[in-house]
Image 1 (cartoon, helix red, strand yellow):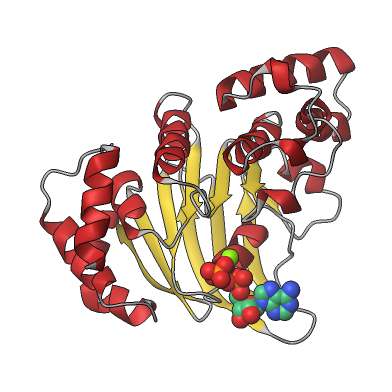
Image 2 (cartoon, helix red, strand yellow):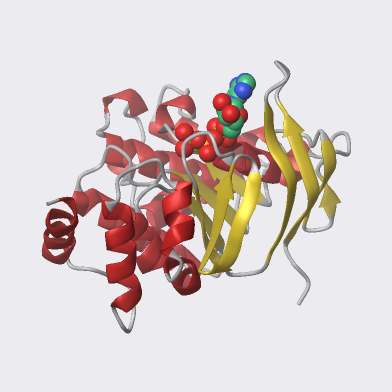
Length: 276
Ligand SMILES: Nc1ncnc2c1ncn2[C@@H]1O[C@H](COP(=O)(O)OP(=O)(O)OP(=O)(O)O)[C@@H](O)[C@H]1O
Ligand SMILES: [Mg+2]
């Protein structure tokens, strides 16, 4: 099968000279659910921004549905192929009402106003944003809802691939499960390719079919999630964080079969056990 996205020998260096990505090779196919993991500064966000065309490669290539992202004038096409939901939705929301926020993308690619209207309603419905909130300022919404608005604004562009940077940060367990189950439905029922970036290994284990481990701008491991968790030494090497990650990883790799969804109480219990 032809991949949706091909990353070939990608290097990316920030203007201040920081080398963030070094020789990345990846192929991403249709309807995949992938997690990018790795310690802080390993290059997850930078890679995502290269995949959605926001950053152009310093060397190497990124091809998205046949489009070379370094070609000039392709950004309007690219936003309809790969959507990126920012690590902090507040960096993404800048319109004065929920409705104009969701309409911003479709308007920006010059769709007729009728279609913009239709897409806004559809995206809001799918993302679980009530039309009663359309005139509200996104700033006044709780974080969970702000993130839904951020996701709706991406969905309105109908990208096949959706990258969500830290979907569960700053949310309680219930909200985390809601957003994850929502992403899962977009993947399973709507056929999107979903890429999540997260530090939460339980989320990775429960939702991602494939895991890409990044370390210092390189791909350390790219394999089915189950295989990644069977190699705790790689996870340990990846995380400066606590050894409980490894214990959690080992526990997860022994849980057979994987369940798609965990109950809130189970998640709480598991977190308690691994942190104790
Ligand atoms: N605007 C920037 N200018 C210069 N260097 C940057 C910039 N943004 C990130 N970097 C550097 O690029 C490297 C990769 O950073 P990136 O933000 O992609 O990592 P990350 O894996 O997303 O980290 P985190 O888990 O903390 O979000 C790091 O060395 C970081 O310090
Ligand atoms: Mg990041």
